[in-house]
Each structure stands twice: as C-alpha cells, then as structure tokens.
Length: 163
Image (cartoon, rainbow, N blue to C red; front, side):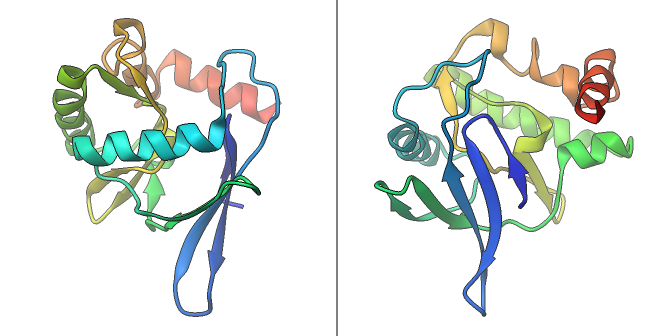
C-alpha cells in the first residue's frame, strides 16, 4: 500500500514489467469533505487538470463498477517526506506557485497537502486528481503552504497520526 486518502487506497502493482498505481475508491466517512460520485469525480477532475496542464500521472484505465483506477506510477519521495526530513527545496515551492499561476485563472484549486506531490528528478508531480472550484480560503498561500515546512500545523498533523 502506498497511501490512504479521504477518497481511496493506493497500491503499487506490477504486470511483471512495469509498475503502476491502483487506486481503490472507498466509502469511509470523512467529517471535513463531502463527496458525490467518487469515481466519476476522479475521471472528471483528471480531464480538467489534464486540460489545464498540471504535471500528474497518466490515467490508464478505470473500472467504474469496481471503482478502481489504474494510473502511472511516478517514483519518488512525496513533499511530505521532504518536510519530515526538513529538506524541502525552494524550487518545490516555486513549482507549486507556477502550478497555482495556471490553476487560479481557471477558477481551480487542487489538494495542496504535501502527501499529494511526488518529486522525481527535482520535478513536482500532483499525484492526486482531486480539484475543486477556487476558494481563497483553500488556496496554496492560505492553506497548503502551512504544511510545506515544519510549521505548527504540520507538526500537529504528524503528532495526531502517531496517536
């Protein structure tokens, strides 16, 4: 298992030659986010972000009935891992701001939490497909940046996860 988010579980899978990510949608309650049809949202959000030009893994296949997505595996550490090690490079934040410069004019926010970004060869990839209409409260500068360094908010999150 690679990770567990508010929408699903992600697993590293292989066909014997290549590695992929298999995301299995779950329906566990989430007290801070309301979902509609998760699999349809994933497909719609992927297309929206692809059109905008956000660097992200390619979506290869979707099994709507079983609520599974097969997508490209981008190997690397997450920004969360870099924050834990206190090794976030200024270029990561610069790349994030470049993404925001493309997202905001088209009324779009993504989930800026650092587990959603993988760094491969110093390039930032958004590995989730979730996006929403822009709200200033949830943009990178007002919310996401709080978790991109060892801030009080980040450390509280880490401590909560341990318990």
